[in-house]
Image (cartoon, rainbow over all chains, first blue to last red; front, side, top):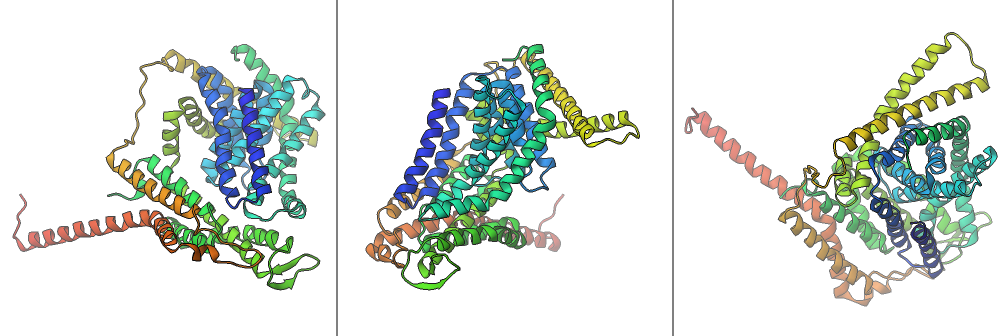
Length: 223
Length: 312
């Protein structure tokens, strides 16, 4: 699964680069559908594992909490707890659950807020955040609090950059570095708000949630 | 004949994908504007004019952003209009490209508004549930757990507040309070859901003989509609890619692609028009049909009033 996932992500990014360099007119079209296709290997490998209902539940519950939080804080622009919860899901239940939590919360929250061209990007971005969180904690990098907060901030900014990419690559031509830098800078206030919200949500929950999730994992013998 | 909404969800999904592709495939102004006009028509038909205006105002910053990005930072184009600050010259060409790009993005936004009304959450679940049963189940359960979580969260909050009494909290204590509340909520929903999972297992959840009830059935009418759209779509793709779609913005607006091949151009535009007009056509046919039924009803009523037909 891991190999395929990396392959999907890397081929999506290389497609973006190729389309930009060749100045293809249909960049927006190609990378939009490529983003949808990139999610498929994750979904299929999850499907093929045929998880028992018990092993499904962490993903379901954490996604539901993330979506409920996003709905409760919908009034504040870009202030969402999803990133924080997805990071914790990845850390507690591994990279695959991290990806699924991120992707499914993206999909379901857009059922409430309205689907748009941003849906596959959000699913992918949150999924990758959970995926990397899982891998990093597997390698014992995400242990100290400061590293978790740092990852949360980086992930929020990465999320923002990833979300802006489709608009910029697809609808601004020809691209030069001035274009790209200023476009990302214009999105900066939203990304700062997102990063602040991630830290604010991580602050109270990261310690106790990780502890409790460990307890539940032991108690119910989850994978 | 029904309206597009009443067909099988895969029909609407396929129609949506083809329309989306058609509107993203080119930056030729004619093609983009044709798609935009129909997108506006459908949004107004489905949600009303007010909603469309709201969306337009909501989208304006994005449009300005794209026009700005396209014209401020590049000096392409020959017809200089004016200079904006220290940036490159704003030309007719890059301004046009910016506006058309922005409108193309707006078209996609509008299509998604239609999509949200056309494909409801349960239909998306039905499509997913057939191909990806585990993910479909997860989605359904997430949707079910959201209101539960919010309700239980309120209850937990009230309980925790009741335990505090009149006590005022300092900043650090507030964080601790929030942490406790959220952790209680997490534990409750985790354990609750795991009990649900156990009872699912006890009732034989992943059984082989499990069948699921589905409201939608794929019939010949759906197949006919899909194949019609598919043929039009493929024709449009072939024609569009083989020439008439080309439109050069730089160094100056050049319609050479349009002059290239007259027949291909007409076929391509016609197929696009037919794809776009399809749902409207269905609705119009429907309307006339119902009109006829109403008329029959009225004549029937007249006969009853005149005593020609007597109901027991």
